[in-house]
Amino acid sequence: MKILIYSGGMDSTVLLYLYKSEIIETLTFDYGSKHNQREAEFAKINSKVLKIKNTHISLDFIKKSFRSDLLKSGGEIPEGHYADLSMKRTVVPFRNGIMLSIATGYAESIGAESVLIANHFGDHAIYPDCRATFVQSMAEAMAYGTYENVKLLSPFVNMTKREIALMGNNIGVDFSKTYSCYKGGEKHCGKCGTCVERKEALLGFDPTEYE
Amino acid sequence: MKILIYSGGMDSTVLLYLYKSEIIETLTFDYGSKHNQREAEFAKINSKVLKIKNTHISLDFIKKSFRSDLLKSGGEIPEGHYADLSMKRTVVPFRNGIMLSIATGYAESIGAESVLIANHFGDHAIYPDCRATFVQSMAEAMAYGTYENVKLLSPFVNMTKREIALMGNNIGVDFSKTYSCYKGGEKHCGKCGTCVERKEALLGFDPTEYE
Image (cartoon, rainbow over all chains, first blue to last red; front, side, top):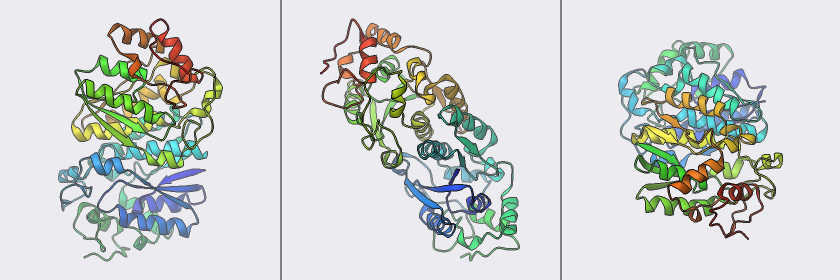
């Protein structure tokens, strides 16, 4: 059985639906970002619909000690394109490495054989811990570092967000029950990097109400 | 500058003294083990003596959700040799992977260029996340997954605990200000796996008062 690192955003929701029959539990991490709470609500809702246990893990040390404008403790979220250099300010250092390590230990604890994560090709521009080079090394570290050789599954690593959205649309994912905006408001702002790429990805079938 | 993953045990205390002029901060993790608190006191004391900042990071999700007899939530600590198979029950799954990932993100946050960890050859028998294969993959994942290519330094990976102890003795480390016992009592029990290997390592210059 598999566990899924599940934010409640578009990509991980498509992954949840693609692997729903094999996922034993979803893990939702709260690292103090401005939008964690809004995303996490949908992680809870979508897991519940599929009768999959959803576990929340609070990473208080990131909230307290890490520097990033994505965090509540950081500065303002920049507007513009997701792949712009200005978005570097929103990177939470080694976030995927941290989530994957915790998920690996948890998987070994409960006897799950692999960990699913929804990083994709569009993340590559800005986030070093989303790239294939990182994913390959991390997969080896996870396998070598556990008794049961826990596997890392990252099926979207070479897909664009548009391709993921089209796939999700084909299998009937309800994107109105996903959240992307880095600002974390009630409605999507429509202007921050993640809103811009959400719009591009969902073009033609976008149920989102933007501000 | 470097940061050190610092439990307050023998090995990481030797590492602290070996690299004291390059270490900007020590990170002490509390993951709910029976002996975390006793070790952590010495991590604090030894860091203070060297005027190095010591930061405690509490990993509540391990305390709550992981299965291991090393944890307060687990069963009794077995007696016998550290390398015995019975000690497998005390493994905290992927513990080093989790501590290294958090330290990596923290290093990138504060601008430190590398992370020191004191895993050694004697750990190999039981702990998969102490072996050279894990360390090499994890080092790559850390470098690929960060902007500044944070380095993993594991200088003891091919040394025995005895070799580390001899080295520490040569440079004047006060081993009475280190703690090993998995049972976490006021005095070292002298019977659990880590006490047995502590005795072997410090033979001839052991200042420890055993029960």
